[in-house]
Length: 297
Image 1 (cartoon, rainbow, N blue to C red):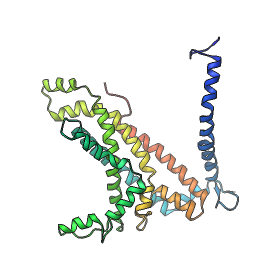
Image 2: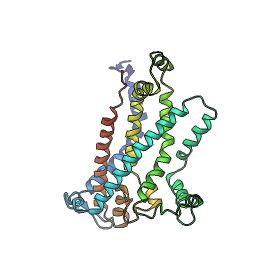
Image 3: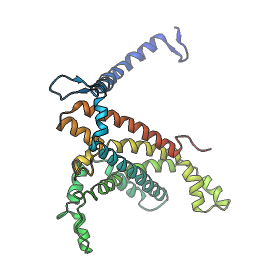
Image 4: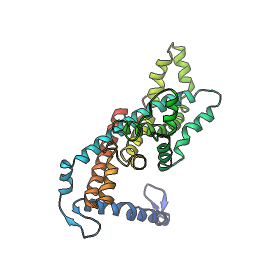
């Protein structure tokens, strides 16, 4: 039988492969691609999900420049993303280096740090809602034992966002620790032995070996955490619903409000595409900051 050029497959084998892949490709087209194209079309219309869409050109995109809530949501989203990405990665790297050492009970600690990743954001947010309840929550009760006043963790405009970032870091650290641990265990011990023979101290070993070899892993963590942080919704919806006084509203939260509460589906679609551009740009910035996925020689 005649082989397909470059792949070593017969024509029949290539056709069989196309048939097997076709259902997945068609599913992707109808579930992902077609709705995305339609949403892009709706972003240029005024659509309330009741009447037919009315074409308004770039009106929805121009509306953002006069929408104060959009700029507040974008600022909150960026603040949440930046702090979540950098704090999570820094803490995770330190914990991973500690857990990579031969200490008693290391398996238990690894499981404890990863445990929050098992539960959904909604379930964890409900638990934190009770823990941070101002008059009856466990956190404020513990603080009261040390004569510290009860803090309005989620009801104060100045404390709500830092509290949500703290919760996000708590959940994300476990996943980042596992990724860093896998990378650390791939570093040859002989590199540290050679550095020690050359007189390098612990900091020099970290700077010249550990940090450099963890750059691709750090890049992956930065990019993935950036993408997920920019799409934050579940935890904020459950913890604060964007309040108080829009102190925690994010772009995805605003998309939800505009589409399902105010019936402005066209404007919501425009917001979604602006968010897509922001994710693309900030992911590129994360790659630039960390130097990309290439290993240092």
